[in-house]
Structures are given as structure tokens and as C-alpha cells.
Amino acid sequence: MFEFSAVVSWARNGAYFPDNTYSRVHTWTFDGGTEVPASPSPHFVPAPMSEEAAVDPEEAFVASLSSCHMLFFLSIAAKRGFIVDSYKDDAIGIMDKAEDGKLAITRVTLRPTVHYGGDTRPTENQAGTMHHEAHGECFVARSVKTEILCEPVFTTD
Image (tube, rainbow, N blue to C red; front, side, top):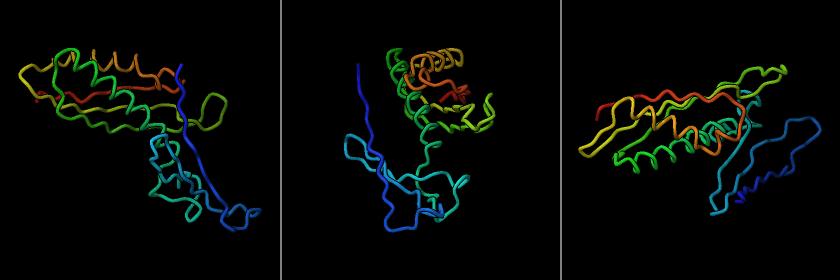
């Protein structure tokens, strides 16, 4: 068993609380000491109670799925003898009403573009298989009920 942690910190800083106009900007601190400014999405909480430049939980959810997929994909590609020079995913999460009528991230689409180096390059079918395997191994994807799609952009370089 493994344990993962994050410290989420917020302080009122003297703001009047009962009128619901207090800042929701807060900090995520991770085990290595990295601090990330966080905020609710400006889609739901307007500035100045939110901060557009900060990471919101919905963005972090999408990034977490994308990052997990990428890490497994890189490992699978390396084990198969392919050299990955770069990997970029333009991932998108869609928030919509779930079956119970409440908002949820109902779909995440990963759109990775992978550029390969070396003499051996995968075929489109081999690349698709590696993405499929990465999705099946991703701890985060296996932990959520959101539909997660992977639409890799295949390149021959």
C-alpha cells in the first residue's frame, strides 16, 4: 500500500465571511515542498474571490489524468525500444450534468502528440496499442468513473 498526501491551506485574512464574498484563493503544498496557487474556477466563482492564474481543481483533475497516462505511455514505449523525443497532450475535460442532475466532469479527452527519435518508429497501430495499454495501467484513470477518451495524434517523425 502507498500513501499520497497534499496539504490544502486557506485563511480568511480578515475578510468578512457571512456575505460569501471572501477570497477562495488557497495553496496546495506537496510532499517535496512544491507550492501551487489554487483557486476555484472563475466559471463558478468570479474574481476577486477567485484567481484565474491559479490552478483550479477541475484543471488539476484533467492534468492528473493526462500526466498519469503520459508516464505509463513513456514507460511502455521505452520497454518496446521506441525513443520518445517529446510528448504533448492537449487534454480537455467536459463538465456537464451527471445522471443525478449535478455537475461533474463527465468526460476527459486526452489528445497526445508524440514525436519519436531513433531509427525505429512505431506504426500508427503500435502507437495506438501503447496508448490503450497506458490507459489501462493509469492509476488515476482506474480510480474514477469519468469517461476518459484517448485520441492520440499520430506523427511519423
